Image (cartoon, rainbow, N blue to C red; front, side, top):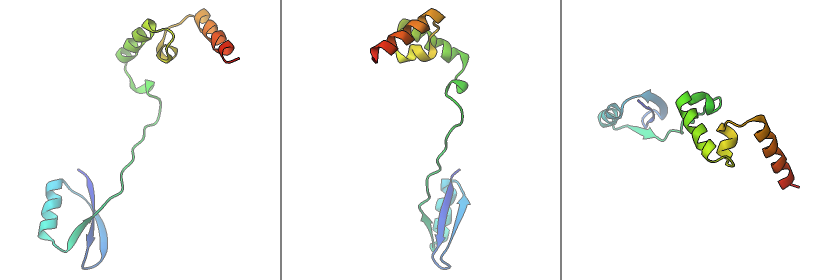
Amino acid sequence: MPTFKFLNNETHETFEDFLSIVEKERLLEINPHIKQVPNGFAIVSSVGSIDSKNDQGFREVMSRISEANPNSPLAERYGRRSTREVKVAEAVKKWKNV
């Protein structure tokens, strides 16, 4: 259920209430001196990385895709590469930028 903000036109006071939409409509019908005021948006963010929220099955599928596309950014993130392959990729990247 959302939180709604209201303005009482008689007392010029604002207040918030945690109501369902049906309850909000009923409140406004019964009390014509009360008007709904626009609320700000509730912004929700997460903490941590995406990998910590993905299960093992998702990581396995991403690993298979990265093996089929070894030169993609996906392969850098999820791919299973040997130490030799990692060093070669770093050397190629270094010399491409020169």
